[in-house]
Image (cartoon, rainbow, N blue to C red; front, top):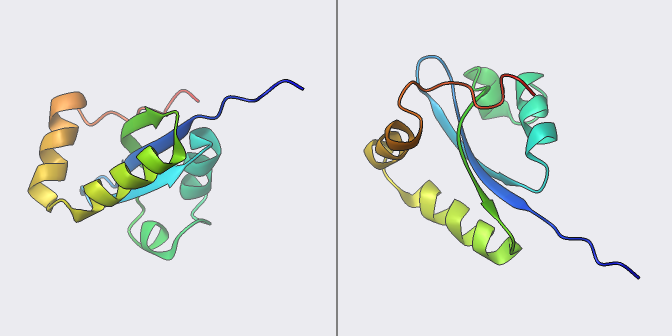
Length: 97
């Protein structure tokens, strides 16, 4: 039996007005699509938070969960700095998916 390699993602979505949402998933394309269709989470739907501005990949689920919790505990300024450092134009990283 062949084992399957899993990849987990921690991501940050943003609205045009820079409201932020931190999440975790094992299928980032589907998860972003759910956010875009405004059917995934009341907060992201209410504030139109649909643009993927940052993500990290993990092999181990516990590492991804720990990182998600870490990012959620960060203050807004620290999250903004992380995005600015890695995606200074705040481009939607999933625009071509």
